[in-house]
Image (cartoon, rainbow over all chains, first blue to last red; front, side, top):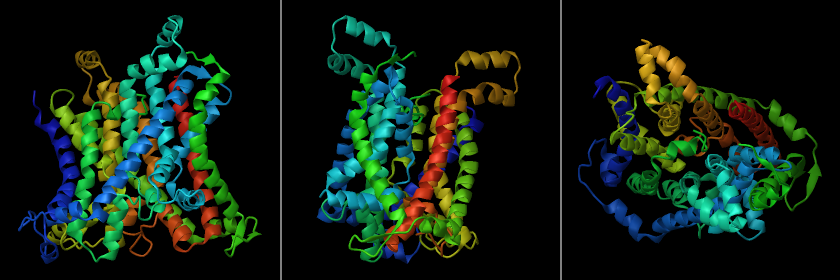
Length: 267
Length: 287
């Protein structure tokens, strides 16, 4: 049952999404001379030089390593602390629970620009400036509330009888939580991890403010190259193209749950 | 679900509380500290009272950025919401193409924000970019680094490119939860396409659409990296939104007092929106 009218809109939309990405990719395979020489839809003399520079120059490839280190630390940290909290919110009423939940929410919504300068001073004062840990902890500001929210949504979908039966069977809380409950909401944990990964990976303002050399993320390396060594568009395009890959890989794994995650577990 | 009253549940929340409070309370107190004082360095402060707040609230610069911000947010919502719903309605429901569509559409959401800015910068370069070159070869005078209108259009289209998929994904999830029986029943009753949308699809999408609109509202209200990389807030100040302006004042000019006062006003606006968001969500949840 193929209806051409129905296919038109999604196809055009996806085409619109792919065009700028194609522009970036095609530029990454051009030499600087060709780029500045004028426009061409396909690379005329196809070159891998831009990618070679990135994979051989430590200031470039360390950017990727730094980004991945703090993103992974942040993801693990956020989801680990969010799991028990989300359980508390989904199962119990306690003093100030609604206010606490609202307060967490406000942090997800706080513009990072407000926190840039105070964060710089705070993390410098405790000697964490320019470390992966600093960025990982700073990103907790918006990732923990997000993870709590998503996990709470998924946990509320699990009937309470599961908990009660397990306690009757003599399970202690930690054992029940780790052995039974977390495997039950494995999809939710996956989605929460994906979202923490995503938001930590795409954020730049805080990551750039909190680092200078040792932990500089790839995104910051790109902005500095653009301003310092002239305007090496091909190199910039190659570096940009490479930052798309990790995202594309993780999307593939959670493709059926993405929407549920964006709806904070509430579809 | 009925919840049990248990104050011991606080212990489960403590780690989250500590980590988020560390990131939220201390910096916020720093901001409050700067907002009411004047400093000439060396950690010497003078009490200024509400001087900075009055200065910010009266400055035409703040008004301009706020108005630009509101127009920008209004524009992207007006484009992204109908477009997102439209694409979600026409997406395939079953079969192998669903995954392909989902993955391709989600791709822009996973690209670092500065790369989005850089990508659109490259895409829109008047002489050598795909978009800029095409527009100019069609005889349209287009140069986003010099013309305010071009810069605005490019920024808005970039945001549409970046975030419409969020709305598509959410609406699609809402639509997938409609059982086939509903459509069959509507078909038997001879319901029009519009009636199906109005009485079956829209109600199912209401909840996710609320989330989508409010997420887009808030995220676009704090947009910084993409327009900063694309236009740097220019030409002139024409694409300087609130966050860009704030960073210019705080880190560029190091005017800590006015920057802090501006931060607090900005944060207050966001808090108000948050509160509205939370109230609407909770009301939906109770229904």
